[in-house]
Image (cartoon, rainbow, N blue to C red):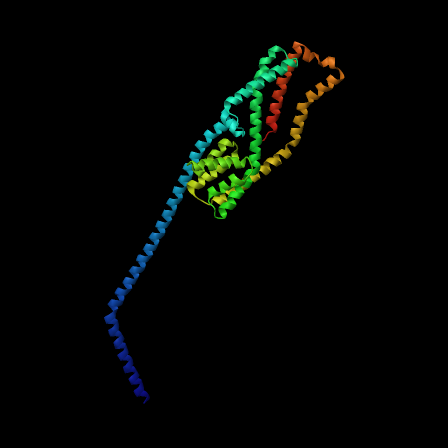
Amino acid sequence: MFGLDLAQLAFVGLIALAFAGLAYVFFFESMARQKKTDDRLKSVKLAATDSLGKFAVRDRQAEAVKRRKSVQDTLKDIEVRQKLRDKNIKSPPLKMLIQQAGMKVPVHRFYLYSVITGIIVAVLGVVLGSPLYLAPGLFLVGAFGLPRWFVYFRRGRRIKAFLREFPNAIDVIVRAIRSGLPLNDGIRLIAQESQEPVRGEFRRSVDAQQVGVSIPESAMRMSEYMPCPEASFFGIVIQIQSQAGGNLSEALGNLSRVLRDRKKMEAKVQALSMEAKASAYIIGALPFIVATLVYLTSPKYIMILFQTDTGHVILGCAATWMSIGIMVMKKMINFKF
């Protein structure tokens, strides 16, 4: 029985092997074709994936090159415009100088006031005992020196007030942008709520936008009326962001941080240079203090300088050399940022 079972099992196995051989013979070609088809589809998909990857890399590289070129062109254009603006900042015309000082005096009226000031200074000099030949010099000082000095004084004080408030204004714009408001709404908010002179400058920008000037162009014009590097930085950031894109809130936040760091550095330098400034003040005031003490102790001895022509020449030479020395000391202790 055991041997019969083995024979039956062997017979069944041979039959199964025969059927498997027949199936392999009949289906081998079909299986081979299917395998080739699958391999070809896999290779095509792989090639397509590689091609898409290459195209994506090439597109990204082309986009990066295009963006870099756009930034470079924008920077060149900004540099050309900035040179023209710097020329107006260093030697602005009188009308622009008056506007930068925040004054609303017409140019012809300013000239009238200058002539009146020159006449008053000349008359006061003659009344106080100055020789008549010094009257034209006093008139020139009163007509051209004092009025322009006053305008530059007002201009410097206005720039300082602008720099104190400007970083806070940028922070307000950054918060407005991060909350979802557009840039022009943030600028309009500063033009309504901020302090002078920041409010006036941003109001001028809003007025320019209402007549068709773009936001970047109006931001770049701010440095014409507020001649300081910080206003130029603001315009450059807005201009680059409009041309190349990017996160405007982050860029303005970095600008605000840079402006605050510049202010801290300026305060630190002023604190470290106070000793040199005190020495310069003492040296500059020493001749006047000595002249006052000599006048109090022996007035006849020093009045020769004021009553004789030789004394007048000596006083003129002394004033000239004193002015040169004061200007040199001012250059030595004046640090610009």
